[in-house]
Structure formats: structure tokens, C-alpha cells
Image (tube, rainbow, N blue to C red; front, side, top):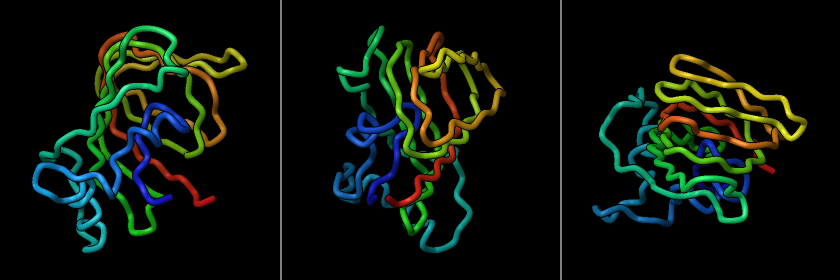
Length: 157
């Protein structure tokens, strides 16, 4: 893989919306340039620095309810492009997910319900921390506009 993963979506729909090394911001630099540059210099990376978000929506075939919009501020990508960290937010809606990566989430605002294909469900609010393991399939439902801090590890295939 050669692009940062977009959290909160799972599988192909994230791949379509992730900030790509080949996509450029207004300054002519790749959108993930600052995050990759910091990783190459082994600097501490703040997750609250000013950064333009990547904005996307779930793929139509995954959308179940609403018209959610996702914003991603990917602040860190390691040199192997298998570990990513940043912030994510979404407006209300519900979509299908299929994770190929492991994701640590810390919800900072809003309320979400995550339900597995087998029907196991969890509701999360501000301050809740959880891990979604690779292989998880189910749905994300944003009940109230939400935001989270994420750390993602996606092993190379």
C-alpha cells in the first residue's frame, strides 16, 4: 500500500477517499507531505496542528442511511506507509464497513454505534476508546456529528 488509510470506513471506500501521495494541495505539495516529512525526520507530530482535511463520502454501495460527510486530518504516516495517525470527523449517517487494518479510536465528540455482521453492537461517546481489528465487518452509524483521534496499522499484503 502506498497511501494513508482513511479511518471510519473500512475497505475500498476508504481507499477511494484517502489522501494520496499523488493528490496535491493548494501549495502544490502532496496532501500528506507534512506528515511524511515529519516521520522522515523522527520529529514528534502534534495532532492539533493546522492541516487541510481530506473530505469524502461513503461509496454509494456502502451507504445505508443519511448523507454523511467525512473529514480526515492525517497528521502522521510512517516511512513504510503502514502506520497512520490523525483526526477524523463525520456527520450523521450509516454505512457498511470492512476493515483490512487495525484501528485504535478515541472518540472526542458525538455518538456512534458500531455493529458487527453478527449483530454485536457498541455505542460510543466522548472519551470512549476502542480498537476495531482487521477483519471486522459491519456498520458505522453516526448518531450525532462526531470526531475521533485514530491510529491505524495496516500490514502490507
